[in-house]
Length: 108
Length: 128
Image (spheres, one colour):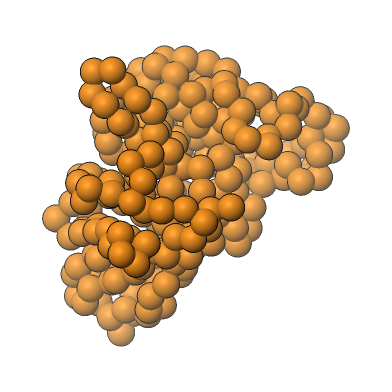
């Protein structure tokens, strides 16, 4: 099973600042990595898939990069609605699919 | 617009079987373009993939739950279901159903991809 490790656990930032979230895989997942956003009491929402492709309706301020074992989610300028928990998820060659433990982006 | 809705008991006794159903509207579980998954989230914790079912009935489960899990699809009702046997307090979680869109691999055919639509989730508590 591939383990995903996200860092930091919590990111305290102000609106307008840049957020950089990291996800590291225990073995290569090629580019088969997604990012989801989850707000309290809600289901996760797909933001990025295949490491860098934006899902439908996701604004350009949210971007993903990386391949192999190291991935980054960047929010160029935080909007109030961006404060949430973010999860990475891998879907490499075969199941089980796994998620990282999450990074909480909170208002400083 | 595709919508998924989980339903089932919110309280299950230890050692009994947890049973949930996901009803899909605005789309068809009988489509070969999607896989249908269950994912859970213990209170205050992260996400755990449980398994998926394809319209044909083929399944794949997380190894950590494989001995206790059954996921099935009912195309006549446009639903898919989860059964988890011999539950303990560790199975207390919000259970989500989700749709996985697919891609075509020339070597292996239609493959599950990522979760694009989710249900709102339902909390299941295991307690006597």
